[in-house]
Image 1 (spheres, rainbow, N blue to C red):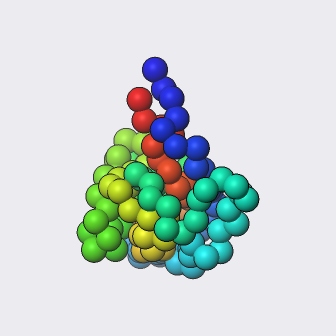
Image 2: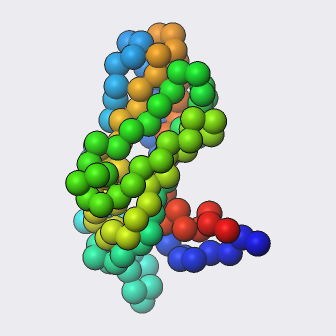
Image 3: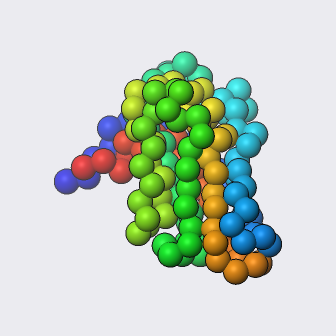
Length: 132
């Protein structure tokens, strides 16, 4: 049975086209918690602790050539886990929304597929919504 553990879902997306094979890019370098508009009365702010976040290669994922990594996760106490079959980087561990925003800002996408390959990447705070 799937049920939400936390009703927090803040999403954004980024389109990127890759012209250089194997050159890493950071799709969300400007993510900051201070840019998030929280619903009044929801009890959330940048210091709210959550249990995870997701970055997803939503469109065009190629499991043979695409990877996502998180440069700041270890320093923030966040554990990254990239699923090579789905293109989803799940980040887990108790941290603030601000800390997860810092982690997302350092996520790097790399593809060794041919030049001009297009991908759509998204991020979502609060991956606990996908827990069983």
